[in-house]
Image (cartoon, rainbow, N blue to C red; front, top):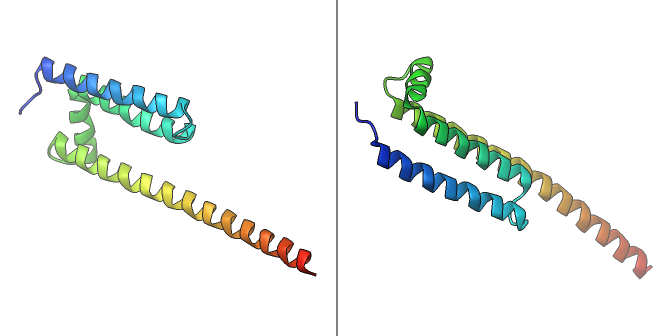
Length: 115
């Protein structure tokens, strides 16, 4: 089994820490909603834990019934992406409904002013 060296783990952990700080900065500057920032932060923290404790990934892969840790990571990553897409689709549908309601209200007000 190929394992990452300590140097590689430090580099990857450092990069993930930088991404985590960038997410916090985006939330602070109101470029990213707090709920989205929390989701991404949790995912990064999980990645940091898995990188720091590789045996944890082996345990997860055995529990999932897959042969290797990379297979487990691929499946979990895919599920995470699908979940993110579903959440975004729901939010878009909610915004679409709100926009439709606003347009209707504006149209009704405009019609009342014309009368």
